[in-house]
Length: 251
Image (cartoon, rainbow, N blue to C red):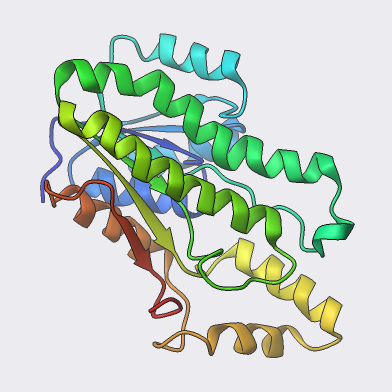
């Protein structure tokens, strides 16, 4: 699969899944534009990638910031949009969650997808080609206690994707969702620590209890998510799909 000649914009590109997706797309030949709120991580990933990589600061939940990003990209043909930016939100019972914390999760995880699509889809529709992959989650497809804002926001992204696919699919633009399961990394480490504290158990016990639910008995690696994005782009008939990548967490 060669993506030479195509430019991909990846939100939340400075670390974690965003950086892994950027590496995979770059390795496949694409030019990559990394977007995030903090310049230092974006700069570091771009330095690692070298040529065909650049970055721009943007708050995906802020319409003015997204508009400024789109203006800055006016001379660049963004043909791949990866909406990856997201926050994990609080780990607490719904009745204990503050409204501000709930709103922050939806502002970034859902509103951000809306704003980026609104900004970059018109040019794809006009050209008659393009790919949008929204990063959702298997969370919400099976119970994940004390994570209601996150689960609800990711299921909202899936609903947004399936409807949007029918709006722009006739124009030749593919819109799909990739739903990873638990991914090895800092975010899941945080969740396991919080769960261990809540349950009065060890970090290892909290992790094992979670991971044992997967058919493969493990979590997904960040590199596997990047590879999945490239694979999805290699399937021109894929539109309106929600692909689970969960090591069998959801089957």
